[in-house]
Image 1 (cartoon, rainbow, N blue to C red):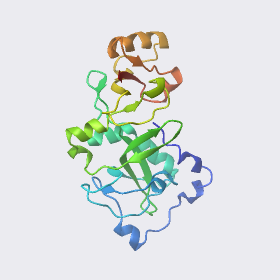
Image 2 (image 1 turned 90 degrees about the horizontal axis):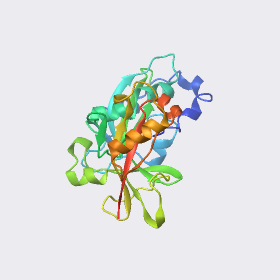
Image 3 (image 1 turned 90 degrees about the vertical axis):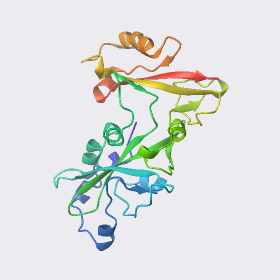
Image 4 (image 1 turned 180 degrees about the horizontal axis):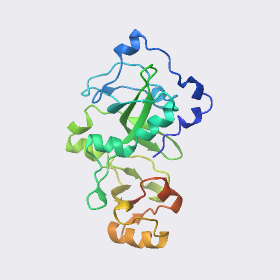
Length: 244
């Protein structure tokens, strides 16, 4: 679940991380935890600087909900530091979603983190949650919500599950194309297996595949992390079921 847009700025903008002084407009738009913002695609995928916009009520259409605010040290690359502090796990924990139970996350929701650095001599970073919409090989876009995540109705939560197009023989492990979770045919992610709850080190793809089929169910399609993915952070298996 990537955040690549900011990584390309390490060289060109690293010197710019001596942040400029804050002006009145920024002081008026400093974000707060729990606030919601109607950020557009450009603002969400641009340079990683906070766009200095005003919040909207979470009951109105918005694309970003703030989950965390923290200080940026003066001697770091702001974007890299913000990304390290703002992971999907951090956003899920703040919002109380996608919690593992005995190593399994049942019916995970399509919620990911986004990080920003604020142009401010005080150097805060902003972490928040978005709902990605997957478009196959094209970059994901984001969906709007009309509620804070913790106030979502059961119907709205169902709509945020991972459901992907299964028409014309499309495979579960193909680049996902988000569809409504009431559509058919569709692939639906029924659970995640969080492997760190079962193994301290990488046990090999063969053992993971066998254990994944046991945990997901023999009739399911499963993904299996490679060693490289395992070493990157939180290795997971996705358990897919086809709804025809």
